[in-house]
Image (tube, rainbow, N blue to C red; front, side, top):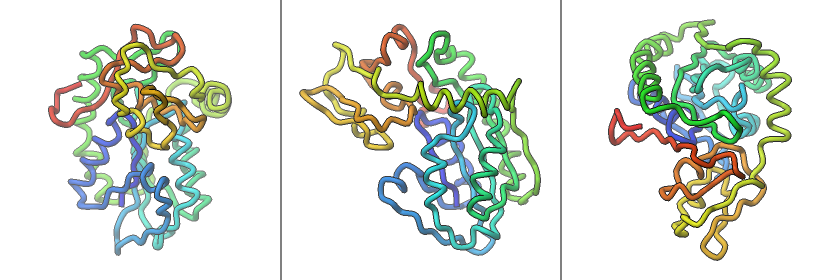
Length: 260
């Protein structure tokens, strides 16, 4: 059983690959949360996996909230693993996620971080990767995935290949709480004159935080900072204050393995 969350397609690509290779069930964390589907039963010898992007050097808040609510029969004896996608490094994500699983009585046995194209654009100096860099990251991850899958299928214990980066404790235990408290806000979001009222942003928001009013999106104050609305807007009409002007968009499109 693989629980996953993905806003711009990176983690969805990884989760899809693992599900195809292992034959295990895929469960979208955001949909489970909206439907309040908390109870699951693992088959005999079935693994319990979690695939998610890194947000501010840690797991997304939505993933942690859903884990608190999950009731998984057989979870305490299952082989549990995490695979996270990140633009660069993970900070202390392994420790944070291990703690979340331990609170449920589950043991984190294995973990990987996979570099995928950057998606954070809401602060000065942050933008999507160049097409060349994005493709290089995707190609490198594509080459790693068969080995990652082999290790998971073998249920290898205490195997962790993650990139915590420099000063991981500072990033995850000092900067992350400050970031989540002061910089995860939907107040700066607005649509510009290019908006045609298609309402795709409303349909795609994983927490149903967007409502259309007079043909334009209005954010409702429950944003998790995933930026799906920004990156998926076909008109590039969604902006975050003045921080996203002239910045790019990114979404992993499986229709073409080389499409960035």
